[in-house]
Length: 133
Image (cartoon, rainbow, N blue to C red; front, side, top):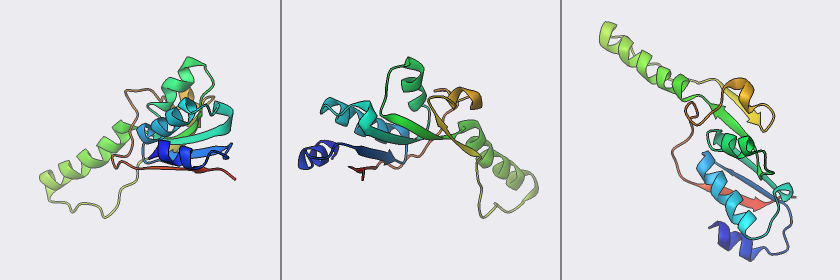
């Protein structure tokens, strides 16, 4: 899909790529870079930060500009604790549960403990790739 979008819009110079996980965004960013678009002309925003941090750790310019960090341990705890409570005391499952999140970038990712072990992210596979205004 990314290649078709890039080919169909040869006049576009600035791109925004986002998706429901880092893999989706990474794929779009890689397709753009393979088509000759430089990292300064790409704004990629991922979900999870577990792949984005690898780009940032390399110190090389990247189209991956930010990601929403979701700690996998926090997400797991949101599942395990209500299950435990249900089994132990019959407590109803909560209607909603929210994991703490934080936007990170190449400067801030290390301050919240992002790495490829703690990252989390979405599991639905889609990417939105489009020209930036």
